[in-house]
Image: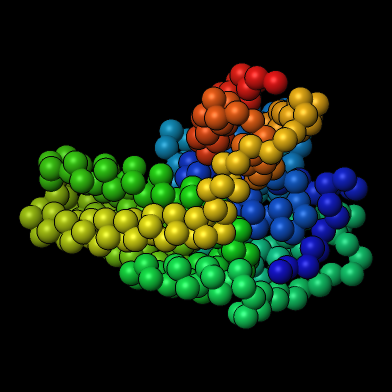
Length: 367
């Protein structure tokens, strides 16, 4: 566990906004910042971030650089041009690609830079550098303690997930701040993103689609690092960099035969990884949360269910992803099978950060 260095939101309240078009990065980054006691909101892109910054002040903004429509550099520039926001502290999140760090160095829009995947100690130092001093606890503690390897939870987790090919469980757990629950949430969010990127890459024909390879490999690289599959993440990086390197020499967007063969081999490994990861997730959830416990309906009064709905809707109004998911999981045990389907739909909407539809499904639950 990491000792909280900062005042919780119910006191002075340090606030942060994470801007990234990759939901897994938002979830992983949010969990890290929440562990340090910050109140966290997320934005799925530059336009979303600008809307939020206009409406609210944040102590820190963590900005991904590679985003569609408006990239991180332009988004940061626009934020600083807003009235009263010229001094906004913005931290760049870099995938360490060729040219990314050069872009950061060439602009004055960022106060600091963190490389993906973010290391806990570097994040801690960054927070202490840039958060207002009055929002730091008097006694700063840097200790980063691993969960004991002998704990039942970690032992059970390692026993199941170490069977996944190319997965380094210890590394993945490290990036999840050595909290198994954090890691499981990242896996759950990653499965959908992995399958979406994989499907797009499988449709590549080799004609005018190099940019798709770059975008999807960039997304996969980040997800795979968070999960702890360094080997596959490096494979994704190689494909991404190769496409960029060729693009510097050629003006066309086609993919040559050699690149297609490398992509096919990579997809074979990703298919195996996804299949084994999904099986491990199912096995872990079945062992930790047997169906008769997860799906069983507890004898809750209408008042208790209504109160839980109100809590979830409050968290939705504050864009608090983790509280929303935890609240929905609890509500799942309180309602009928018919309403459980609504909760599953609400969870899917929340995973897409579609809070409007999340609230709609929660409101449809009968009491």
